[in-house]
Amino acid sequence: MREYLDLRSDTVTRPDEEMRNAMRDAEVGDVVMGDDPTVLRLERMGAELFGKEACLMTVSGTMSNQTAVLSMTGRGEQIIVHDKSHMFNLEVAGLAQISGVQPRTLPAPGGRYDLGELEANLIGTAIQTAPTTLVCMENTFNLNQGLVVEKEHIDQVCELAHGKGVPVYMDGARILNAAAALDMEPDVLCRETDAVSVCLSKALGCPVGSLLAGSAEMIEKARRMRQMLGGGWRQGGVLAAAGIVARPASWR
Image: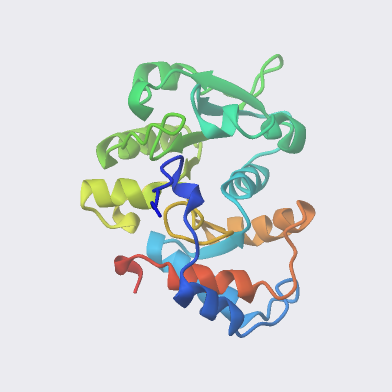
């Protein structure tokens, strides 16, 4: 009998025996009440991985993205996204439907903004315009092509945006791939970003899961936004245990 490799996506990975056993034996509590020890452990690990103050577990990259925007912006504001980004193209218009923000799409070949064009589109508050309150990046990038964005460009975008008082969010669904390609620790690569996410269900073998990391204040608000989106679980440790097993070497 022939065996075939399924190369459609890194999302079709399966939990191995170690991961299944960890999920079965996970110590659990109640996530809404804040006492699930396995979820809390995974969140501490995620904050350390990215060098951020706090971290929140969600069920998917899309939930992390939408939770981040809800937590970092207000309705009627404007965010900048890549024209080929997942957030703009593959999240069922969630930015408009859920967060009530106006996406301003800019071309970003290879995931890199033209810095002059980016600066020109950082719009302040005026009577007829929606102010720009968030710049979004993506790494790896470009609708499943897996293009890596170097730290130098990330830092340039952050410096420009921060100079205008605008935070930067990194959709890092596959940020661990980018870090490996650049031979760089994730916390170094994302040091200047205000918030970053990573998917545990892409290449790491987890059936479900994503992490969102940022400041303690931002994550405190994100926890409430996650609840609104239906992410208030009870015994979430069953899922978090898979993420702990899947941790990369730099996370151990």
